[in-house]
Length: 397
Image 1: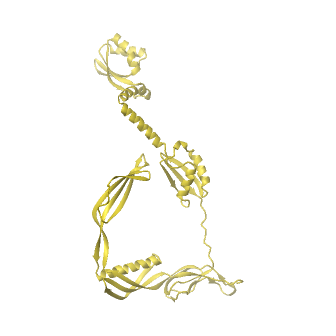
Image 2 (image 1 turned 30 degrees about the vertical axis):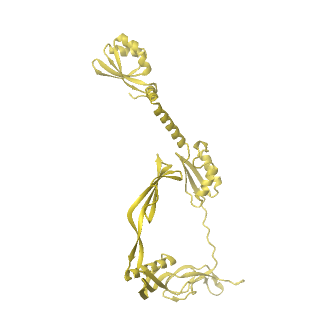
Image 3 (image 1 turned 180 degrees about the vertical axis):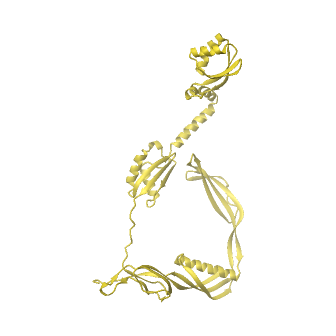
């Protein structure tokens, strides 16, 4: 038989009944309103049953009449637990303080999260939330209901179409749905697309306007590539020329690469410093003193404590100091040449975009002196060659 919560509160005992007229005892107990349950016979002269604490003391007169003896085998329930707890006063006090501390900590807001924002900054949302009483270390019972907070935050944030506030344990999560505004289209004046440098056209795609040049055409800087003037005679009008024109341009680089280079190397030695993290502050607990290395780098890692999926503002910070040394590496002339060419190509891509392609190179001059390799290199580069030129219209045209 399953034990009810009421029986657990009242307390119950498991008793062993021996000798006498046991069947008569059970019948008289039922007549007297004494409830026995889980009755089972363990031997011809012995049976075991469960009885509440209050009914146990009412059982004594019936034991005398029936000649039975009773022995308590087990005690369960709240009264016996309180008796054991009274013997351990310090444990009871510690348990009480722990429960109070747990209640206090769970009644505070330890973290405020913001999600769904794109145009609205997190600082603006948190400032509006603070004005409504939502901030870290705030008592949860001092806050308004979630639906009230949502409406108030939506009024404080003009760029938000909807704001949802949800409490997840000690964390307040603010979900923001921003207003969808059409993108502002930039205003263009009529223009031509002209060559930004001397080049040979390799590809031309005109979205708007009239193409003036063709593939494999050699153009000079300032030549019109896609004209913003379309039509003929009286039907001539100006438009915003749009399109893409790519061409081969030539770049000359003076490169110098030292034959001796310094390289950073990790030695494998390290030293660990530990800090206790409390909120945004840290308290060092190990690894005191200055680092024993002349050169080192520091790698930091943080870990925060969590309880039932909620991150607490307690944790640890580990700082590992890695020893490094600087080695000198001697390059050959071929290695220095490869390094210089690679750096020049990286510079070309950085200046003209990732779609730029270096299709050819020619070393015009190379010499090695004073511990360096000097080169003059001619690069052939395919890149976008367009730039804008506004069409100036005279008044009355």
